[in-house]
Image (tube, rainbow, N blue to C red; front, side):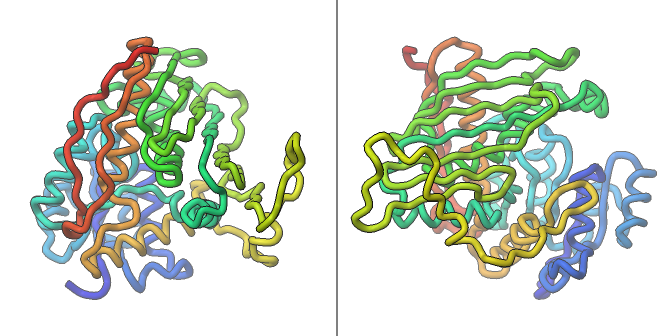
Length: 385
């Protein structure tokens, strides 16, 4: 295999086209590590138009998987097809990067993880927010104990989607291919970040509803109380029914510090200094240290025409390429994505049952080869409310 990883993309929608532009965007630096060879999709005409725009070959999925010069496959198709296509690509000898979520059911995710272990090939799942500068700062503070003992997290995704969004594709809002609504499709990134920062969620007590849309099989509002293995508690809101739509927000609190990320930007950060004691009734947001820890002169983030930021996706693809080269798990790997899906599954189970549900989280990635290692968890377990 050459030093440059040659990609094939399956899926010619918004995300597949965005990744294709990222792989061919010289200014963003990825061509040194990765290049685009071909795209494949269900609609031949759309596949050809996408390939022509990106300057690569239009192929069928079967032909793409058979190409010996393609090293890795990015799966950018409806969520419920991720495991099926990912397994096919792994069995064809390709490393695999799948869009979030890893799939719509834990069983499907397990099939994909098992194929990665059996083939010894690299499996990554798009979780680009792990590469946001703000998230990396908060992760470092949590890991080095700057916030003391974590006590609570608040996860808020108050978005709006018009009814036309769900009508734009037959798979949107379906249980079979979308798997879930605002939580699984939109907020799974935040669920991943919450567990990456605070460790595994062990219990969820939740409610879901379909309140502002019609004709779909999934929720547009989900709320949950979460309990983490470290003892911290969490509050989750995920909705596509918050007109006209606000920014996502993730707050992390400990007994010696706190941080708030809003719209991917660090807006509040405070870690207690040696000998520091807050006022008896708190600081009410005062003494924000953000200006002290962020660069004085930051470059303006570069956005794609779709509105997505280049930098986090670029850094994730670069990490994936390095993982393939070095024979290590990528930072955003299959077991991590499986843990996020386990929490989403527990939230849905709790909402259906009207009781709290315990998760059986997958153990953290081990050193057992490029795909990592993970045990197979049992089904979520109900508990008394």
